Length: 310
Length: 69
Image (cartoon, rainbow over all chains, first blue to last red):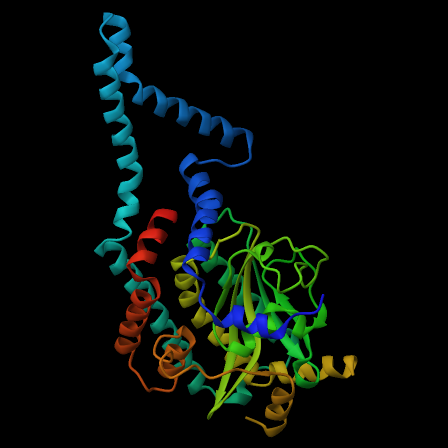
């Protein structure tokens, strides 16, 4: 399947329409909000616990009918009371949601932003104080460091979206003349193949690198521009992807040497503020990779790989 | 940086588009880039992130996201 370059660029660079945002919101509700409200997981204990919660909620809402039946009174008043109980249950669910719009949430987000900014500055100052030649030349050391950074990024992601989510964090780099190939350099979890090389212009990552901005794929299956297979598998096991380009600045030139990606099997995992918050917290870690790649790691590795390809 | 490192990098990288001037203050990577180069302070960066969030979501977006999250 050949990728339509114009459509691909438009898709990456244009904000989602209002209709699309509502569609993503609906997907988010189906795949994340409802399971979280029902506390459902696909296990025996998860289903039993959900059923018990549901029965308890119905029993509480129907409580006025118990006395009505027992005292043989009219059911009208009981129905009105049951409606009140239903309203209270709804308010119980809505209250934490409304708090998200309040000042407390805004203050929490601001603290998280400030933390990311300070971490970023600390990393920058430490690396600026170190000479380039102080880093070990051993490629294995640098690979281990990269994997540790990716593992850290995965922990950050799990703390934001939930520990039970089956996430993966990957470092992608470019190689070949004109960055014609994209390769999976390292992964946080060793559950999928790495070191795979494919033509870069067939990938979302390539167009995100061109745009130089962070991008979220809310549902891989609902787009028709790119092939739906994964980089290392014939069928992708993920539907949501967060892509953070690793950009090196030199004067006016901005080189994207690779991308850090997070993926999840559920659609809309990184939708809205979740993805934005996560990307902000990941930037200090991505900055470590930027510096590591800037100090020769990537160039050496890519040169070796390039020789194999060409 | 060594010149051969730079040469290899230029061969093996994608040249990213610069942000449009009106977006520069609001793109996440650009805010951190300005922080890195010392063009803005930590406080200014925090202000921009906050302003960016408000601009990105809008009232409609905030309500939809709060309900769906």
